[in-house]
Image (cartoon, rainbow, N blue to C red; front, side):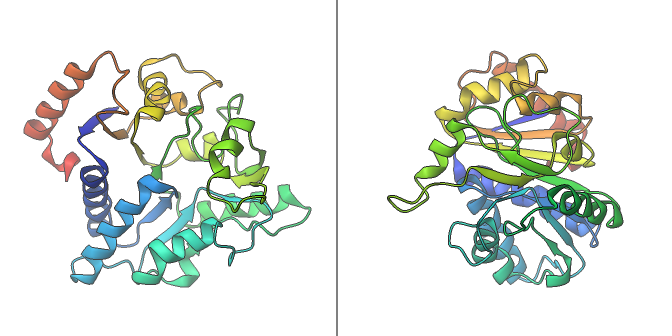
Length: 264
């Protein structure tokens, strides 16, 4: 696990975009796992900028989003379909046939639908690089506390804490969704490389538990300790509860010296 400490959203977005761009250039037919949320806006802004400059081609990339709210159609302004279209897909040349986002409008046959999403990932050869955010309670995707480490794409009931966090994105009087379709922890762990971004003091406890705490279903992101190639990119506030920050700085310095390709 590599921990990269950066000052703010801007630096985090630039660093993450640099790593993703490098992966696409090395493998133009990359299978890329994507995430939504405020921290991701800067990442997509930098990727769009690189594409418009002519230095990044997404024409052969296949994408798989982590999750989508159950009950929201793609055109809903708070759906993850809408977020991805507005922040990324409308501005780059990803083939629409290669874009996969869970369908929030399905009714019944949830297991069958989720099995088909897993099958699409396998057909693409598995996810090469998975982008993640993290919730205040340590969830990745919508894998709330007590989620199985072996879980697959499925319908998931959201915790009250997550619903409260999400309520600010919805209009007054509009209830935030209570369920979502999400990749499972087991699905996420099968990605060849994982990149998790976090900013702000509100995420600091979850970040510390994920990196330095025990592996536990109470903190879904702690399962990332089992993965061979995970990079956390976090700001000073999100890193504030880490006990080994000086060591992470030293590791980063040696990584830049000995294996610079991992940072570019």
